[in-house]
Length: 278
Ligand code: SAM
Image (cartoon, rainbow, N blue to C red; front, side):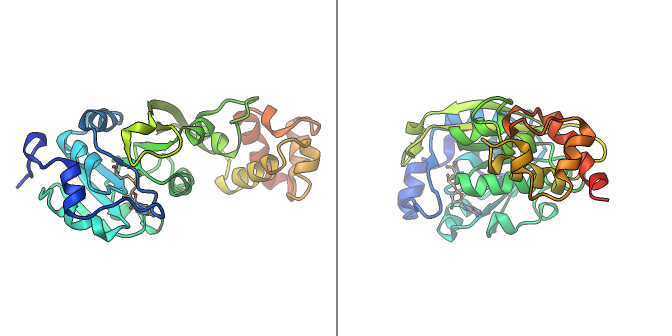
C-alpha cells in the first residue's frame, strides 16, 4: 500500500511535537517544514517517477514526503533513532527506513544503479559524504545526481572558479569529473530552528572522467597546494613526492600559487605524478 499523500498527512510541526523531536545541535538538526519549498528541492533531480532515491538524514521526514509525492522509491538513513517512529508513520511501501550513520553506508545497499542522492545534512557530514561520493572508483558512479543542502559558503566553495577566494580543494574535486551548480539558495528562516548562516542546494551530475588520473593523486595534490594557498607551488608542494617534477613535466610554473591553476591544470599535474615518481 502507498501511504497518505500531501493533504492527508499530519502537519510536520505536529509530528515533531508528538514525537518530542526537539532539535539536537550535536546532530546538526535544522528541519525544513515548508512543503512548497520541499517540493521545489525534490524537483531538482528531475522526473522521479518510479526512480530510486537515497535520502540521508530524513529527520521528521519533510523532504521524504516530497520525494515520495514526486513518485520515487526512497531509502533513508537516519542516525537519530527518535525520528524512526515519525518516519514509520509515513506508512508507505515505497519507503525503506534504515537507522545508522550515513558515513558507514555502502551505496549498493541503499541505492539502485542510476538513482539519485538527496540530502539536507549537517555541513561537516555533508562535505565528508560528498568527497566519499566523488571518490568513487567506478566512473560514471552509481548515482545519476547529487542534490545536497550546504551552508551557502560551502556551496560556493564547491562551485567556485579559479582566482577566487572560494576556490580550493572542494572545487577541484567536484569539478574534475562532474558539473556542480547552485540550484537554489535557502534563507536561514526556512529552517526550524534557523541556523546562523544562509544555505544553498548544490546539484551535481557526473561527466566523463579525464583519462589516467587517480582520485588519490588529485586529492593529495590539492590538499598540499591549498594547505598553503598563499605560497608558491614550489614551496607548498615540497613535501609531496614527485610533485615538483610533475610541474616541470606539465609546464606549470612553480612560482604560481594554487588558486591560479585551472581544474584542468590540477588534473594534468596529478596525471603526471605517477610518472614523476618513477
Ligand atoms: N531532512 C530533514 C529536513 O530537511 O528537515 C532533516 C535535516 S537536518 C539538517 C539533518 C538530519 O541528518 C537530522 O535528522 C540528523 O539526525 C541527521 N544526521 C546527522 N548526522 C547523520 C549521519 N551521520 N548519518 C545519518 N543521518 C545523520
